[in-house]
Image 1 (cartoon, rainbow, N blue to C red):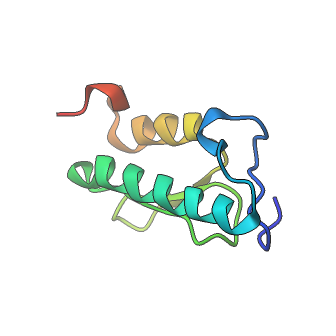
Image 2: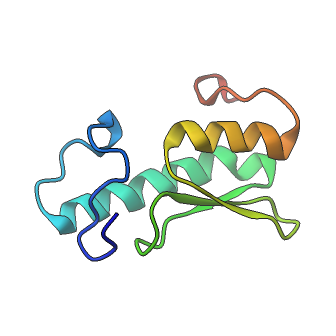
Length: 92
C-alpha cells in the first residue's frame, strides 16, 4: 500500500469504494477506522489508521498492538483479544 496516496491493501473490497482521489481514499480509511473504533470501545480495544501503514492497527489496552491488513482480519483479531466469537453485525 502506498502511504502517500491511500490505495487500499485489498483492491476491490467494497469498503474501499467511492474514493476517486488519494484524499478521498484516505478520508474513507479514517472514517472506517473511526467506526470500527466505536464498535470496539466497549471491549477495551482501540482501532486506529494513521494513513501511513496498510490496514488498521488494533490495541488491546494491555500493550498488545496488531496490524490487520483487512477488515476480516480485524474481526479475527478481536476474537483473539477477547477469547470470544465476535460478530460486528450483532453489537449491542
